[in-house]
Amino acid sequence: MSSEDLTVSIIVPTRNERGNIEGVIQRVPRFGKSLEIIFIDGHSTDGTLEEIKKVAEKYFDRNIKYATQGGKGKGDAMRMGFDMAAGDILMILDADLSVMPEELPNFYEAIKNGKGRFINGTRLIYPMEKGAMQFLNTLANKFFAVMLSWISSQKLTDTLCGTKVVLKSDYEKIKENRKIFGDFDPFGDFDLLFGAARLNLKIIEVPVHYKARKYGKTNIRRFKEGWMLLKMTLFGIRKFKLKI
Image (cartoon, rainbow, N blue to C red):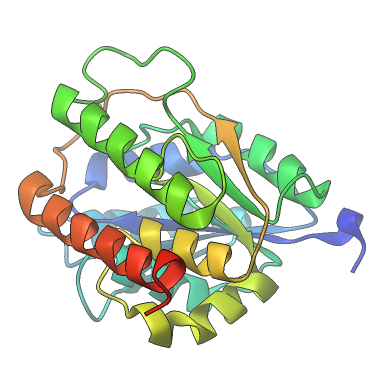
């Protein structure tokens, strides 16, 4: 497969993001040989799915797909979207537009040119927009970055950035190895990072500008899901460092 012939699938998990849907389509640039945008809705109650259908009809030339997830949580939506994807490159974009869609071509270039086999976004390089990330979230992100850098033996600064990019061929291997780690990661971030580390994929980071959401409110349950991520971190230590 030539690097000039790479197709792209962008997975956009949604839950009560009606006001952001059209913005996603308007702001995602055209790049790659072809590009599809796949919305996976998590049983929204604000009319998000209806808005997705309306936008898909309006922008019929943008190759938009959509589905309602069977389970719950961003990790489940991500896995469903990846299974639906036809592209050579798989990308995740948060529907809240806190990561600028205009920066996705930077991820495409990084993986197309072989700089890394797994491209992780980092929000902690550029100055953030006021209100984009709460103080406790910043501390948690830095903590998990240190821990996962040690576990994976690769330098990471922001493990919980929603924008992650991987070749579909590599994702299929990560998926096969999921039986080792399970699928209880609520976000999907550790699931992918542990999977990439187990395959010894070179992980590099691409800085992104992090913005405050303009519509809706966060779906993150910080303490409950933070506890689950901590358990996954301990699990990663057992598997990677203690070999048990």
